[in-house]
Structures are given as structure tokens and as C-alpha cells.
Image (tube, rainbow, N blue to C red; front, side, top):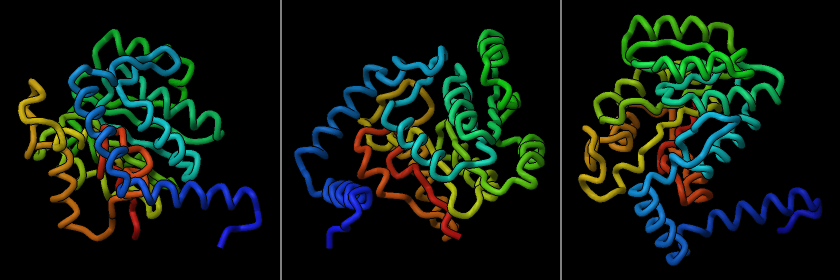
Length: 245
């Protein structure tokens, strides 16, 4: 039944269209081909937010904007900083909402990137930690910042090996509040041809395999396939994990 309210009718139309996409073979195959070709050509390196390279697909950043606006988190924790663009992006969204903080963790915050982040107008909502994201002492320090926070979101985007991401999932998942999300970026590695990357991670050893293993250990989280179906082009397929209890 089509809702009589035009706003609800539009929402229902979108929901039904997104749900149909997995059966649209031509669309799915086109998206898969683009994902492979664009990863090979470092497409994600071409974009910035408020002057800082973000190294993400625009599609994923729109998905993150939708989640942040809907959830309105009090704290977003991100492992892996690189140039700081995603930290600035999340902080700017929280600035628009009017509340919230961002924590960034990286094993090596390079001096030039730290300078650009710390002198950015959005740094007022950002706290930086330098160290391994799986250092339990560092995780304890981050945990202190979650105390009293009603809604916490976590984004994992550092070392992409199975072992590292699985440990991140185990350490940071307790911080995620029910109804919020834990996002494991670069699960796309599992869907790429073997030896696509000159890095330790590869097919069979990557964030997606870590997510699969993590979900065997808990029923607190589930993959939000509606986001996968909506985006099709994404570096995080099966990486958007919703805390359901």
C-alpha cells in the first residue's frame, strides 16, 4: 500500500528500489567492474573535504553522512588517520549537528599531517592519539572518553590484515552503543583480484575475512545489507555493522 503522505511515499519508493538492486544483474556487474578498475587506479585518492585528502569513495562518505545525521553520535572513534580528511569530515558534520567529538588513532601521525589537522577549524572537535590501535593501554585511554556518552560510533581504517582488524573489532566493539554502527573499511580487498595490493593484506587476509570471523563470535552485531544494496560502489561491502543489542 502506497502511503498518502508524499514524504513517506518517497521513502517507501527508495526502500523498494534499493531492495531490488541485488536482482539487477546488469547494475551489480557494472558496479563490480567499476570497483575493481577504480581500486586499481587509486580513484579514492582523488577527493578531499574542507582542504584535506579524504581517501574514501564519495559513496561511502554519503552513507556515513546519512548514518551520522540519523544517529547523531556523541563520539566517533576512527583508527587510521592518514591525511586526516575523514576526521575533518566527521567533525564538520558534528559541528552542523551542534554536538559531538571525534577521536583519531594512528600508529604514525606524520608531522605535516598533524600540523594541517591541528590548525584546521574543525580541530576543536578532534582528539588525536598516536600509537597502535590494538595497544590495550591506548584502547583504555580511548575508553575513558566514551564514559557518559549516549551514542558512540566506531570506524576501523588502519592496518587491513585479518589479524589486526579482528583484534580491533574485539577491542572497539564494546564501545559501540546499541543502534549505532561499527564500520570496517576496505572490506573490498576480499572482492579484488589476488595480489592487487603491494601490501600485507590480500584476498583471504583482509577486513572482510575479519568481519566474518568476528560475527561468528557475537550476535550483538549484524551486517546492514541495505547500505550495501544502496551503494553498490563502496570500499566497505559487508563492513557496515549495526549493533542490534
